[in-house]
Length: 490
Image (tube, rainbow, N blue to C red; front, side):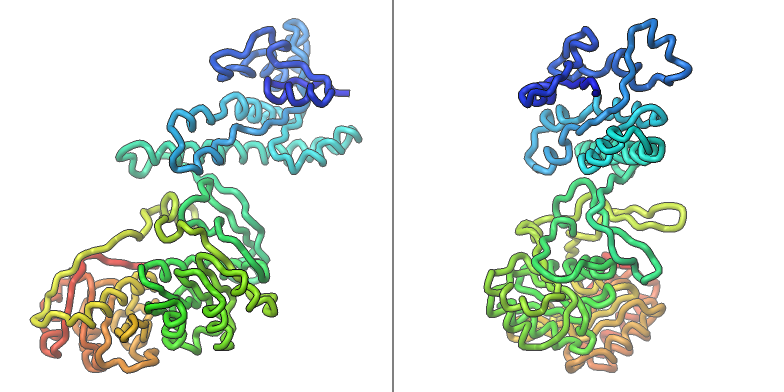
């Protein structure tokens, strides 16, 4: 029993299905103009949506403006269009909807009288409410809230995309983060905390929202946090690499000639802590690799890689709860979208991502590192920046690659992190390379490493006691290189 108003494309589709429809141009008495940019921006449309049914009834009658009771709008697909990195700027601009958000916001403001619908998933509920002609007040308020959130996210996405194309834009005075729910989570870090996984609007580059789940239980809050950490480590390397993460820190990592050998090296780094961890690989999993993982009988919560063969997936079918995931093929060459952000009480901390930083290094000690030590130093440095600070990593080169030998994470003093890394080492420490995510404030950490037999160290430098630390390295015959770049990860 409703009269339907619609713009061109939708009106045509409805008419073809035999549904009576009045074009907006007929209703307003004004044609669509400027290539369709101006269609619904007219007093006969917005007066019908925004008018208060009590206060404005006489004015609407005098002006011949009929009330519009339901507004259903699907916005131009700006998200979908701009996910193509090669999209022409002009094409993206034409997909910024103006009339749609204006009608949505008008209807949401006047939700006491008007029902606004922005999500096709709500069509059934709205149709039922219209048919029953009851229960509108609460539904309209709920839909109005969804509508304002919808247009806010839409505008945030446009601002983010345009901001990437304004040279030197930096950190804006005002900003918004447009998020879309991916899935509700059973709970947060702990069972008493409610949680949900949201994706930003881009869903491009290194986005966990782009992962494909092949099997297993739903991912938890902690699974997703650890997945992020594991993928960061595994894709630090060009060579085949495996990383095992537990509680956001790598407990095992290795590079090798092939993925199976990298996995074996990573597992050997800390087989006890690996239990219940997240395994990330930077190469696809074939049947042989799957069998190598199965043969260890180690329980992993999640295994993620850039692709799985059908035979590899078949190997794990009996482990129904084991989560198997793929990341897109472009993960290796991608980068995280937008900026890194962290919620704090009452606000957000926003920063650039700590990626794509490949500093050179300067040999500060009397002795330069050997070729083997240099390989281990480069490896230890890449892993170290993915460890919670204060961070210390030990690594040793092998015939096939490099393996993580010990990790000291999250300690309040750097010397304690050094001692912890040594204590956690599963292989010989003598001859190992050590990486520190920040400078040594005192020589005690360096002395502890030298006493354990560490032969080479990489660190940013910059302490007022650099000379004292360097003297301790030289006295122990250690090679030391400085990067000039710090990598805290709090």
